[in-house]
Length: 104
Image (cartoon, rainbow, N blue to C red; front, side, top):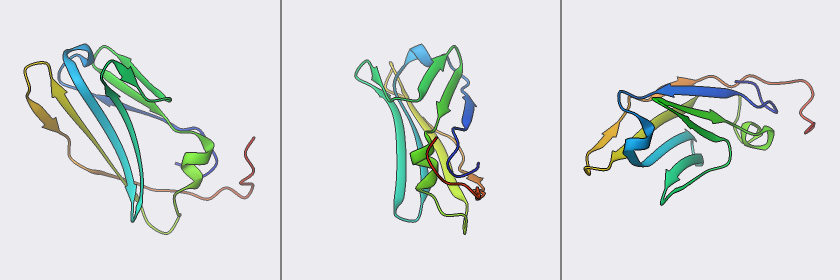
């Protein structure tokens, strides 16, 4: 992912997103964390649910939060209507620099 861009990340669940009462996608680097979530019938800006897919679109401001010196760890968790809670593995996402970091 490049700083000052609006990347989209798609996470495919083994269950339909509408069977989940909570879905949380976290992006973490040191003490910086972004959490996009569906909970209590609401969902975060930049989060789209489509069948089995959770699509996250980060803002320019959000990508600028992260340093290029180390990867961002990404993970998704979900809770079903039955109360079962699942967690994905953690992925490391590299952060690349843009010469121009002005918000467009």
